[in-house]
Each structure stands twice: as structure tokens, then as C-alpha cells.
Image 1 (cartoon, one colour):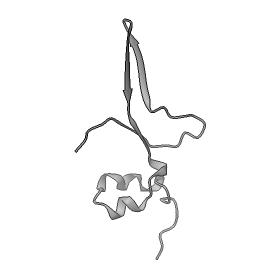
Image 2 (cartoon, helix red, strand yellow; image 1 turned 180 degrees about the vertical axis):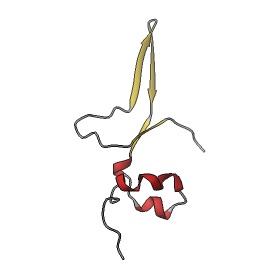
Image 3 (cartoon, one colour; image 1 turned 120 degrees about the vertical axis):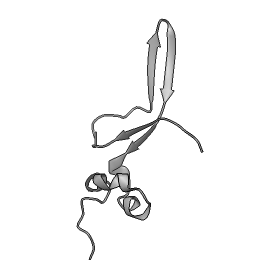
Image 4 (cartoon, one colour; image 1 turned 45 degrees about the vertical axis):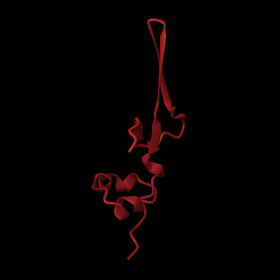
Length: 72
């Protein structure tokens, strides 16, 4: 199993490009950290119910399709 840094965006930022790395210069040294970006508004709401992911349940209203009425 791999471990890697992740940035999770909760609310949509339509006007701002979300970077996928952080670059810093310290004492003449350049440090770069790449990370994966997960935008919750792009994650299908069904994942929260099909997978055992109870930590996603509070975010259902902002997940993709989470603002629609349930089908009965």
C-alpha cells in the first residue's frame, strides 16, 4: 500500500486554479511537495453509501449528486 499527501477541498472554488504542488525556497534551497487533489464536489455521492466510508456521510450534501432528492 502506498502513502502520499492529499489535499481535500470541501467547498467549490470555481474561480481559482487549485495547485497540485507546494514550492518553497529556504536559504537558497528549493523544496517541492507534490500532492493529489480531491475535490469533494466532484466525488459521486453513491460512493459514500456503496463503500464502508462512514466518514464521508457528513459531506453527502456537498458531494456530486448529494443535493438531489432521494429516489423512493
